[in-house]
Length: 407
Length: 221
Ligand SMILES: Nc1ncnc2c1ncn2[C@@H]1O[C@H](COP(=O)(O)OP(=O)(O)OP(=O)(O)O)[C@@H](O)[C@H]1O
Ligand SMILES: [Mg+2]
Image (cartoon, rainbow over all chains, first blue to last red; front, side, top):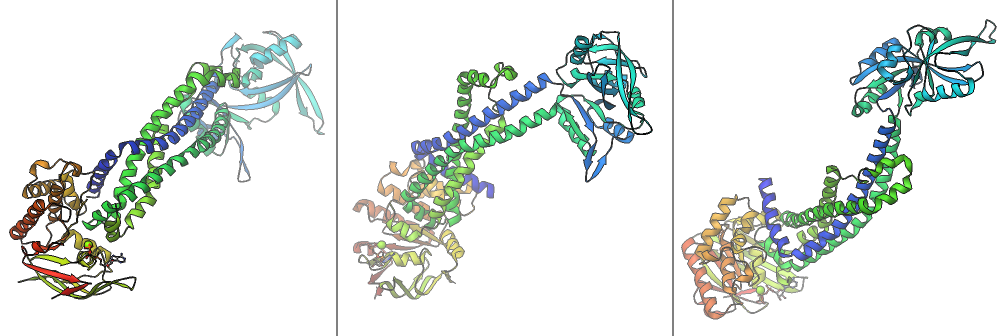
């Protein structure tokens, strides 16, 4: 019954609105321009966000994340064998492998960032492509070098594929004095360039690394391969639920998102200021409309309408203004983004520089159904809010004076 | 006979100065067709508005269909207007944005009637007032007399006990005025609806059951 009444009100108000087409259209245009400004700027912001995220996905190994120890409520959450199993069991984890991290120097004082990992983990998690050579043999003192570090060692120390790398491992003797022990690793593989942290890393067998450290039970992290890029953030949450920290290329996306959230909000806010003009136009139109129809409203009350009925009737008219304003606003917003894509793109790409060269391919703006829906909601809600004052004014009319004096 | 309107010591003053009604005591029977006469400013509209629950008296009592009207209870006043009273005004009575049919249906919108009932009742009443073929015309497309016919149909649509008409023929030429008057008389006879019609024209008074005349807010006897 309530719904039926609502439809009836909307029908009556549709007649009222249809009678003043031009006025309603112009008023709706006022709110539409505000909506278009919001839709356009948000679409631009979302487009830049999308392109930036795509660029990150393109240039980094997004599905590789590393879980490390974290401090929660004052207690360190270590990587224990139990945690390693739990991490491996998170859904959408394709493979995982515990690692130890070390810092060695070569005999000639080149700093080496070392990751100790099972050869199976290299295959399953890091999923490398070998420029030369092959994977480690389990338990042997062999090394696989990342692309950049391999180049450095070759240039400054003349280390070539198949050579041994003399490395100094620092130990402490019984008196606590540092002693450097020389250990030889054979270079069995060099990775192709990956454009990520592994370009700088020397991979060795995990057991060997732990043996050199003299602690067979401690782990520094777990490398995780997620099966699909879309699932990365879910897995990251799973890692955090276990009380551990997650690191990886996804963090760049997080910081882009954080930045873009703020940028989009600020842009939308300033664009939204133009909505105030639209609101004032609606208030003005509806106050005029109520004034012009004073007698009509008095008669409506005389034949049985309650003040609430009058409010609903007026608000129903505002609903149409909002609806028309929303549709027009969305259409104008889409047109606005079209203009940005055609004329603004070259300029924006030039400003952003090479890193975002991928922008050149797609549109720089992104219209989503959500943005359009938000545009509609803004228009309708603001219209209804603007109509509240005129509606209350109408409802408070005294029917006797309204009929006597009204036009 | 059944008393349908009764007023006791009805007074209405504006700003404590202008006395619009002074001790009005009326008894009107069901089905009566009454002309309310009186000079301009004698309180005719004021009386009608109070009887219809649009305005409140300064003091005194009003009984409609045996029930005392509580003028402080806004809800019951709305119910009174919806269920017992039909109003007809002098001119520009209709909602310009709505067709004749929709204007007649309009009061039922506020009174929880389903769409089919509304449509049927309005169509029947438009036939009754002789405008069956003008259902989809807008007020601006109709003459003053036709508009008042639509207003009569609209006043009847809620099946009220009483129709309060404030100079319904005031803006019409004499021929149309007679037609509208006859129509109201016909409705009165067919449906036993009580009519209280404000008019300036004494000769119309002769075509009613009874006339009530106001002078400076008091009933002339
Ligand atoms: N809102 C008001 N404020 C002050 N005085 C009012 C108000 N409404 C009516 N009056 C006064 O009350 C008296 C009766 O008015 P009312 O409208 O009932 O007269 P009427 O008989 O209908 O006159 P008319 O034939 O001109 O319509 C008049 O003197 C009028 O000036
Ligand atoms: Mg009057």
